[in-house]
Amino acid sequence: MGKRKAKQAEPEEKPKKKKRRGRKFLFLLLVGGIAALVLSEDVRNKALDALFGSEEEFQYSPPAPASGNGAANPTPAQAS
Image 1 (spheres, rainbow, N blue to C red):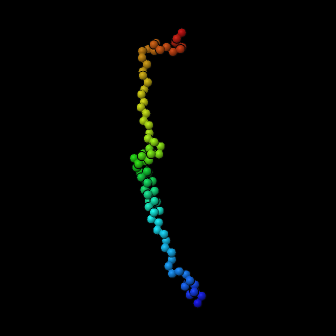
Image 2: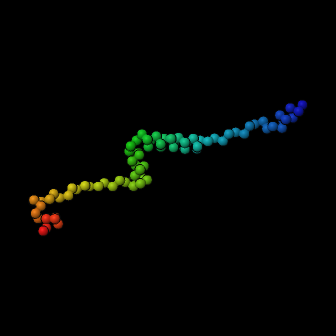
C-alpha cells in the first residue's frame, strides 16, 4: 500500500522540455559563417576589410636614372 500512495503523490505529467530553436538556429548560423569564411576568399576579404579597414595600395615609382657620367654631381671624395 505504501507504493500506491507514493505513486499518487507524484504528478502524472512530466514537465516538458523547453524548445531550443533559437539556440539551434544561432549554432547553425555560426557554423555556416565559419564555413563561408574558410571556403570563400571574397567573404574572408570583406570580413577583414570590415574589421581592419581596406588595404592601402602603394604605387611604386622607381628613382630617376642618373644622367651623364656623374661629373655634374660630384661626390665629396671627388670634390677636391
